[in-house]
Image (cartoon, rainbow, N blue to C red; front, top):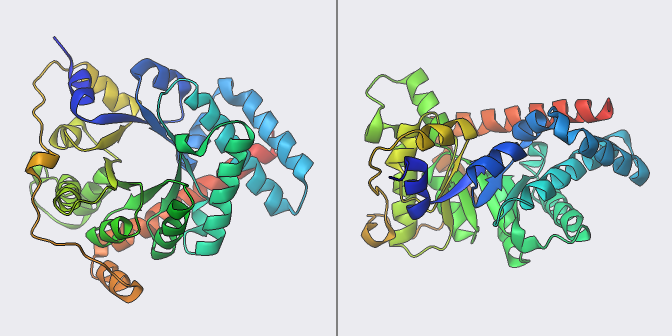
Length: 316
């Protein structure tokens, strides 16, 4: 009898939400995602010590200002860890642009191209990489341009329909709507039953998935940021789900049935294709307190962990 993780893999592409190579090898996902928080954790694992030294030495050789050296260190480390992960997965690794660039389209473009160049200099083709960018207006416009250059993007920190609509219109390869952080906000700000299908994060991703499929968008929906396996079970059938090792273990430990909840064949949406200009996007975000607050919080937290990672590397 198959366990729930095996059943999920039959209907959804499972992605590892970790930088821990041992965990990735254990659960055998197709893809893997990283971010500054996950890289900070990974950088403290003993098996990565050599990569930290390699990244620091390379950055020192490049020279430049103190911040340029720090930028080079963290970018090189992200790529080195990404390369190690790519040795054990068949698909793609997501590597994130510095969150402090989330409101600067041109700087995001430059950093994304630099990350791709670092991979390609190591003989890793761009078709195995997704560049992760925060789903700000500026980030989405950067992704629009990168996609036209053949650099596929993963738009992260996505909490609202406005962000999802703008990403689809930009031709983004993949979005990562955050399930658990939406639930966190509603638990903190409203009262109600948020279990099972009533989970507002589940409802958000389901709505986006149905909108994309009903309107024939090619953008992949990858649910992210799960708080419990119930959220994963409610999104079974979604294009992709990126799951932390602890939750993959819970799924593996369960032999319960796992019915398909999302399907392109049965997708329906009352909303036709929505094309937003900047003012419309910003107004829709302004009207969504949860999305506005969680996006800002997520960028701050990723930026804080980026700074911690720089400090860790500078002390190697």
